[in-house]
Image 1 (cartoon, rainbow, N blue to C red):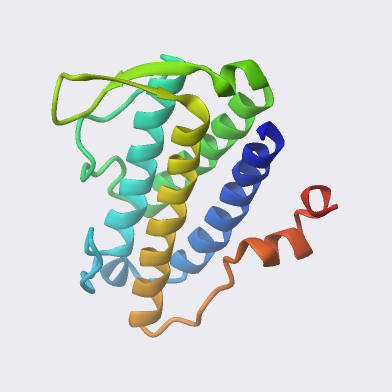
Image 2: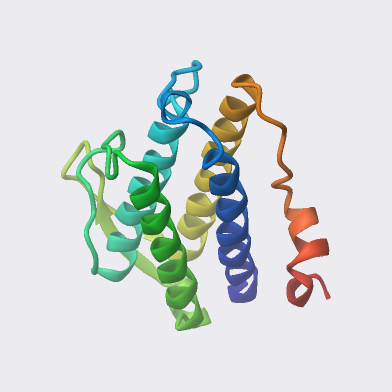
Amino acid sequence: MLDHFRMFADYNKWSNRRLYAAAAELPDSELRQSTGAFFGSVLATLNHILAADRIWMKRFTGEGEAPTALDVTLHDDFASLADAREREDARIVAWLAGLDEARLAATFNYTTLSSPVIITQKLGPTLAHVFNHQTHHRGQAHATLTALGRPSIVLDLAFFLWSEGEKWAR
């Protein structure tokens, strides 16, 4: 199971690079334009994904900065957001490289942003949620890009495995 999550960390890094490359082509006004996605704009959606990743990584590791809201603007300019995304993806990959199966099967405790209630869950299924969450919101950012008239980009896991993730595909 650990290799499964390591594959998702590599896929996450790969798909974020593709999405950010497409978003980098937008003028600032279109990066900020709301097209009806849950967080509105491409910039706000990408900030949300990064915020959620930092919140979960703080819960998992006890380290790093974590925002106290899911709709926070961590970076108002695209270049610094892209740089922060690269660093966070590297952090996720490195953390998973040091994880073992026992830790993946163990429980951990955390509190939600909205309530001080302590929640205890197994790490593995929660990690699955984190990667699913990223994919969900990348899809929203992709839909926003196409709503702005940009060409569709391929973010499929199968394409990643075929094109760049061969170590996971065999």
